[in-house]
Image 1 (tube, rainbow, N blue to C red):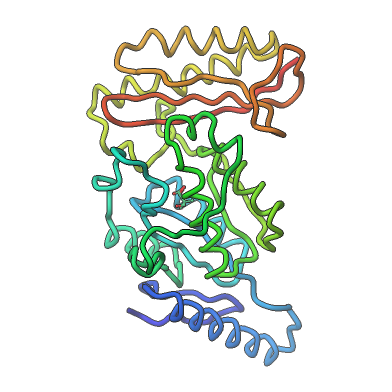
Image 2 (tube, helix red, strand yellow):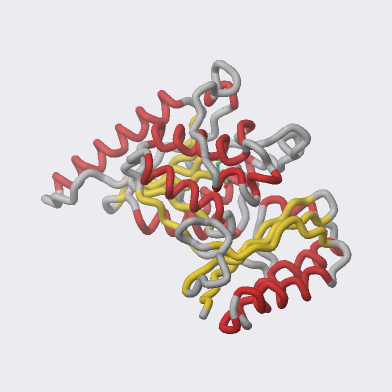
Length: 310
Ligand code: PAF
């Protein structure tokens, strides 16, 4: 792979990112890159501070939503690492671990076009040399609600791999997408509870024309299913438009759109308090978030929208 070039105070690539498969190699490349940037800066008489590392954790099968995270990462830091790892720990029995899309070559090409210098793409044995990690981060009560109720253990597995990635990469900032609202809540809480020094940056959901939130799983949808799946974002938009009448009105408006679509099998539709991620009570007012999850064919889709309740 082409070596990263160091230009203008930031690590950049002219052609391809360096794709790294081991923890030792990644750490050593990052230390080298930081050292080189620091001495370049010193040579220019630029104090600058320690070069900032920004991580974008992904499971690959990258789409335009991921690329907005990557662009933000490139604008925030000096050294950007995109991790690509389909984490077995966050998939339950009978879930789509085996069929989850793996498109490493296309992902690396997309990251090359963005100018990403480092891709960390370990195999499972590198991340879990002893098999499934016996020490895990637990997501607590919120981790067993909503996505966690449908996918027991999912959030413990997700937090465990995110904690490992933070320890491996040592990022100043990590960039996540708001589509996985419960994931973002739990990662932010883990960072606070366990005193990670990484700042979490959250970017808005990216949608296709028609409103469907971008997801790596969308590629499994047949055309009729993809059309039907738009009922989720349409329902959320309907809810947001009547949120000034309260959470019950918002829920009714969303149900009306989603329940009318026979190909969409609703799992949950709920309004939560963004501070606690617990369902709002009747007296709740101010910021809230409506979450939805549904099966369309065999594909599980999630989406959410911010509400401002009176
Ligand atoms: O959102 C994802 O793609 C995954 O849950 C993450 C954060 C990369 C951890 O495996």
